Image (tube, rainbow, N blue to C red; front, side, top):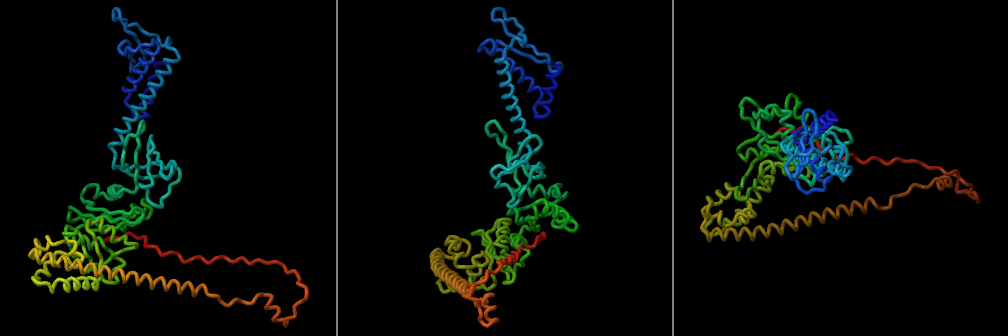
Length: 468
């Protein structure tokens, strides 16, 4: 029995990751609880127990109150109820020790990527088997559209480890930006060696990610190293993400250059920065406008998150129109000089809307206007901005009305009665000269199966990886 006890303790310590000596102490405390239950005693100091860690022999004793001597208690004297008490105490303490062990082990691994196997789905959340525990990946941390089957390999990031009651909950993620960072560290040695630094990242999981990279070694091309020979390195990351696009952007300390790089593949004509508003106005040609904005605004949205700037994209005509409206509004005012207009343009104030948002204090401090002139300029720009907003609203409503009329006209045209083909019976009557029999002869019923025409496939974006 002693050897079996030691083997049992060793197996639990190995499988559960709990310290062996701690398990022996728990077992001793459980036997002391059983003895107290047997003798119906509340004195915690009256009983003791030691277990030999080498041989597994157990000594359980009770202290004599009169002379302080120890009286050994035979294990077989303990009844069923004390044994049940010992069992419950052992289970409780073993679980507490296992919880502490898991918190300690996986708490240190937060932010690491590990590989598990898909086990099941619970209310949309994916349960992943990781070593001896189960990880929890809520729907919010999954890549949209990604589906795993039982037993599938799942590579994921440990996002959080927390204690919930008597359990340890390990939160996993494939949506977090750090997941992309760890994949780059695994696939690109220069990143893990800190020769190449991932300076910034913006991601819409399942669709597109932009990563700004820089190299501390002038001999190492950051973009080329991340892409790899013939795209081998980046392709491994894209495959792991189920085809999600990865744009590698070259980092630059100049915000103007970085924003232009982040908006690739669109070609940027000019970048105007307004530091007071944290806004960048980008000028692109008409043929580059859709590329700069991206599908459903994705390209400009990710570029804004990557660079930390609010980005407005304008065509040269729109840019010139805004400058013209600003000049026409403030140039006739008293106290306005051409140099002031130039300074406002250099500060990124290129429309009446910008001047209204910036306010008079900036015009006084940065442009050199007096307080009275600055207040007059802000008032005039606010009034002009209100007029332009109303005009733009009317133009949008007019465009929507015209679109609705075109749609109604198209529906009416498609829904009009088209000439119908003569029926088979009418065709026979025409050939035979209208001599139809007086009594209808039952004709054999026939059915003609016709397949519906497939709708045109929706245009999808190119799955190739973009390098900026």
